[in-house]
Length: 406
Image (cartoon, rainbow, N blue to C red; front, top):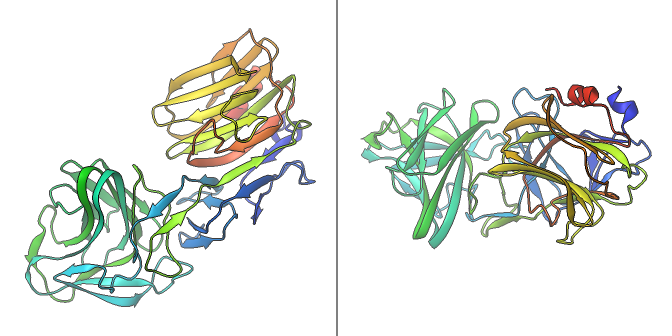
């Protein structure tokens, strides 16, 4: 079996331009995906730098040591901080610290936009904060980009130091304290990290705070007037997990990111109508969803194959005229996964990571004509698609095992 020669559609996220994500096969462009996103957005490029991507241009996700990027789709969100870049602005209240601008930043568009966050000589806590949302109810994630300088330890929280995340900017490790929901730490480049903390509120004020620390668990100490950390950008969003930074061209109001839609219709000649295989290679950060079907916005299932990796389970279904022809529901998948759904009349098989997961010897095959991400049936999913392959023949089981082996 040759992955490329046998497949009718092959897509590795690599080539892109406004409104288009190129497929490697067919080479005539007839299976290139259409992309819409009514806002600019940011991605972390292959050099670990934050870079703005124009509206309607698909975004890619890279990672440390990653040689093949993935397609990045995220839900609509909003950065509730109106001055997420200007830490010298009075918008941010300083407590026994000062900030110095003009520092090198991990950014293509703002290469000297970072600040040095410097302690004064007081014997007290040293930090900076901003009231974000008053009387808010919901789950919020605070993201801040930090780098060690003379001080290597920082805390991020929502105004209550006992409920915090601490970040060791030298070791690249973090720890949570108190009742915060979660935290994370992502390396960018040259010692810079995206540090995040998530917590849930019920009718209480939400404000975000960052503290310099000399030792874990102690917010108050005597500063030396010169030591500090470096800081670039901040984000507060009503999400239960961090999404990519939403940074304004001009500060003073919140910054939003629109929902991206990626699809392609009129693919009947490339999708097997009596037999075939749908294969995806996915990095599952949060949720993933794809539908091979024949509608773009209907809430009916119609005729389709759906692969959905959600927060609590994995669902893979084949629908024929809105009725299930094949169904699988299993544990949530994490990390990287290769999934193949094979189908023909009364002959279905599901392979995940080289192993046969489920077979079914009863069922008919739907008529399908399109590829849809963020379909109405799936909700808005965070997508880390590394590759998509569609075959018009039902590969034998040994080929499915080979295709899906990590």
